[in-house]
Amino acid sequence: MRRALAAVLAVAGVAACRGKAPGVADSPAVRATVDSLIPLVEKAVGITFKKPPRFEMRTKAQVQEYLRVKLEQEFPASKMAGVEAAYRLLELLPDTVDIKSLLLPLYSEQVAGYYDPDSTTLYAVEGAKGDQLRLVLAHELVHALQHERLPLEKMLKDVSNADRLAASQAVLEGHATVAMLGVVMPNLEALADPSFWNSYRDQVKLAQSSMPVFQRAPLILREGLIFPYLAGAEFMRWWAIQGGGRGPLPTVEQLPRSTEQILHPNRYLANDQPQSVEFAEPRDADVLHEDTMGEFELQIWATQMRNGTEVLTDLPIGWAGDRFRVYRTPTGPALVLYTQWEDSTAARRFVTLTGARFVDRPRPGYRTTAELLPQASRPTVRVVRAPEAWTQWSSLPQSR
Image (cartoon, rainbow, N blue to C red; front, side, top):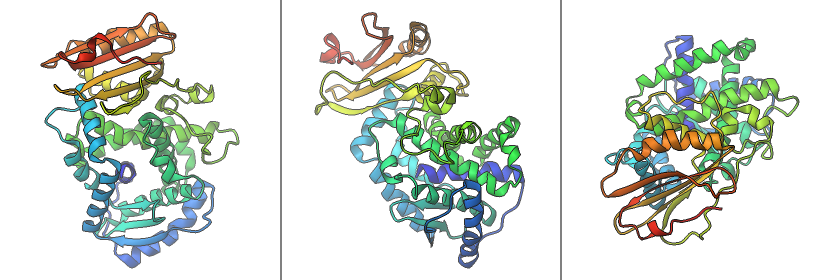
């Protein structure tokens, strides 16, 4: 579902640049468009289809139902409760916002077409605007090509590490976005021009204003949804220029392992892998949710803590790894976050800026701490927000 919205936003940026007024496509015309796009997409990607995907039309009602089912699968009630608790405790999500009620209209706001890896089928939505649909179909045909080379179902359903998943999604979306641009822009030299990408990024940001649900979503959701294709496109542009014979698409073994590597390809080139941060205690029934934030989400959090509107990602922050847990307690959820850093300077910067700002935002009935752990084997900052009555304050969960 994230891919469907990402395609819409990517296309919105292209449409804004091209300034064309689209018509409305019908089924025969769409089928003809798909057939005409296949060789163009193959040329842009540098890979040919072993077998082109099936194609079907869907009504808006069918798409709405498909998205609802996918939402239930991707975010069962237990996971949704954990994600909401974590984001609320970190002040990334207002207590009054229900993610589930927001996601369905957010995903379905302007979906024109999508590729479903489970059924290996390319779908177009009836009544979609023709020019927009052509771009979306080009984008989604790239995903179909990817599916012939990569295990998309396995990659996109690995939910044990959200940061690693976001990095994989960035490769897929970035690759599809660059290829889509190659289909509609014969002058591929423009894609190597940094000024083009600056303009494209601005157009995408501008296009968000035409999506009311997206516009009023919290920063964490807005940025999380656009990251895979916008940052991913820049990573895959770097891959195409600097790849040095690695191939048009990373293999499973070559995939970036963190959003840090997506944001800063030199870290990928240097094989700077994220550190594995784990809790020392086994996961039990009291653990509501556990995951990894990664550099990008930590940067969104830092933006929120300084009351900013723009997430600054140009420079690495020295992130090495992190892990958090949300615990059930009788008086409300508790959050424990361990972050590891490449050096003590990065750790101190994090705790004195983001950590201190977080501590200065009291939550009624809660205690909040952010501290550098001097005895840790590598620079580590622990952040805790938990009810004042939490019995584990005297013996906090440990990391290793």
